[in-house]
Amino acid sequence: MRPFRHRLTAVAALATLLVTAAPPTSASAGVSPNGRDGYLRVGYFTQWGIYDRAYTIGKLDTSGAASRLTHINYAFGNVSEDGRCYVDGGPGEGDAWADYQRPVPAEESVDGVADAWGEPLNGNFGQLAKLKARHPGLKVLISLGGWSWSTYFSNAARTDASRKAFVASCIDLYLKGNLPVLDGGSGGPGAAAGVFDGIDLDWEWPNWPGEPGNVIRPEDRENFTKLLAEFRRQLDGYGRTTRKHYELTAFLPANPATMDAGYEGRKIFRYLDFATVQGYDFHGSWEAVTNQHSALRVPAGAPDDPDFSAEVAIDGWIARGAPRGKLVLGVPYFGRGWTGVTGGGDGLFQPAAGPAPATFEPGFEDYRRLKTLPDNGFTLRRDLRGGHAWLFDGTTFWTYDDPVVVLQKMLYIRRSGLAGAMIWSLDGDDDTATLTKTIGLGLATP
Image (tube, rainbow, N blue to C red; front, top):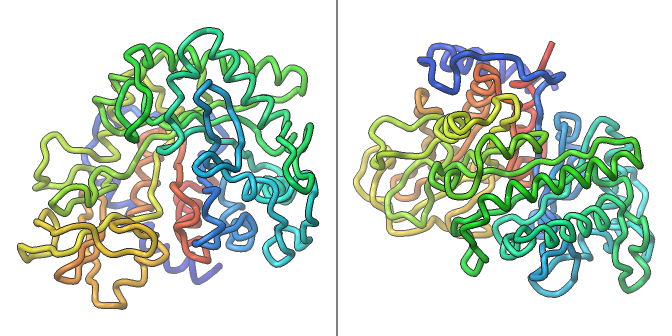
């Protein structure tokens, strides 16, 4: 632990200087306390990360990540065509095996105890329960939707009756824990009760194109607010029976046009405990020119005007009535990359032939692998004013967040009076949770 803190001391001092020296913006002027005891540190755990990435719930504990988090958002829960929360093992519909059927071996288990086949709560859900027992202050939310499973959100939100039925189904499945019984016996009434402390809505996006095939309606904008109101009503009603507050959060876009098309600004924050804001995927290999994908500020010389940045996203929500103290800035644990880059120089804003080769998806790579590239022929470069870093070897270009950029963002969060930081996604970090520890250091309170 001492070497990690020692290495970051100089980085923290540099990042403090950089952020405090930057001119105030609409997001950094008039800072006021957010009213919480400490900052929120929200990490998304991906259901599928246990496979190729071998990133288990147990690693959250052994790496030290869990002790730096306030929330884990479990990604994702699905929404059916008839507007219900459901778990199904069918292709593309869910992974009940990973969620609560898979017997977790002792070497992966949070408490070192192996699951037996057919226990009511195995898999990731069972491990989350064990993780919460070890970290009593940690909250776990089920995140609904995501890029792939937002297809039928519009159906669920369309009418008063559909909203009531949808919310009731989600509470029954995830909060009351009434899981379908699977082969072998896992699941059953109350099997997952107590695992989840609330619900995160990741509808991408109301009244705006997301994945091809998504149902989109102009009335999504108003219906999203009504859906939040229904969630708040039923969550509070259920909470009165359990004497507990169940949290309601949402993932919100960085694009101002998407904000206007799909959300009623100030109104939605009446019902949300907080909202996480997209702080990444501003650019990527779907474009023909290299660029930043997660800069804190729009870099000088950016070819697009207007352009995206974390600051643009936060300013956009504040201008639309969002309280600073309910905004949580998203931080990526992945990079975006191009290859066949021409034009010379440092590689930024240059033509490229296509996505860079990568481990799981062309043009997309985890931080844990990108951090090794400076030892393998890549030069690390950074724009200190813009708050972004990139790697370039003369042909291949990667834009990503390293610990220096992450610290800059944490200091921006503090200076701007925001609620905290969100991580997409925890499985992109290295085995010692370097980025999560950096967030913990940057948002530490006396």
